[in-house]
Length: 260
Ligand SMILES: O=P(O)(O)OC[C@H]1O[C@@H](O)[C@H](O)[C@@H](O)[C@@H]1O
Image (cartoon, rainbow, N blue to C red; front, side, top):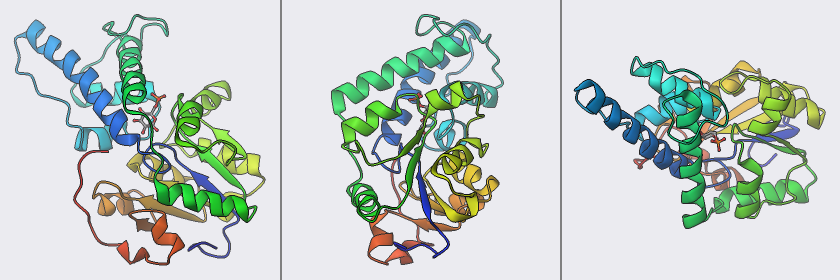
């Protein structure tokens, strides 16, 4: 169905970078926050400032993961451990929570200023599934998922949403653990082998692979097709339109892109 094996009965979509053009906004907000922090740390310690790279650092340590895990993961890659702090730490406090709050303020401001765009191929694909009555869910680490779906014009197109808020309520470990995708498949009433996972993040395809899903589609927006396959994608496309018109010969090719 729609370019996928017949066994697939349910469709599970990541949000940022798959449905909406917001992965690059998140990457820019993470860079702004981390660079401010790293510059201040360099001044404190008299050491050189090495900026956050919105390409490899974002893809490896942050993309697809829950916010606090992203903060902790990147800091660990630089050998930095900070106190956890409290959820209401003022943005920019030298704690995991304080830095995460600053990043969230920054991404929300950028989203307000720039707006949110759907990927047209994704919107068309989801609308087609909806017209055919095929079960669909969004599975996102983002706590801002519902607002972003609304702003991008996806209202009413998903029966199930498992986002960062649901994961916290239900104590589900975030991507790359498979639990959020498994919860969405369960809520739709399908075992993982009858569900497809659509992901642009390395942590996300790893999550789909670990969950034993029927197929994991890597959506390559930034020229990381090989890395998506290495982390568990069964098939790589550059856009969901490739699946609708049967041109996923795009699989195997690399497109050079910026950061997303
Ligand atoms: O900070 P939020 O909106 O809760 O999102 C958490 C994460 O959600 C993921 O979808 C993004 O890929 C990450 O960049 C982001 O950090």
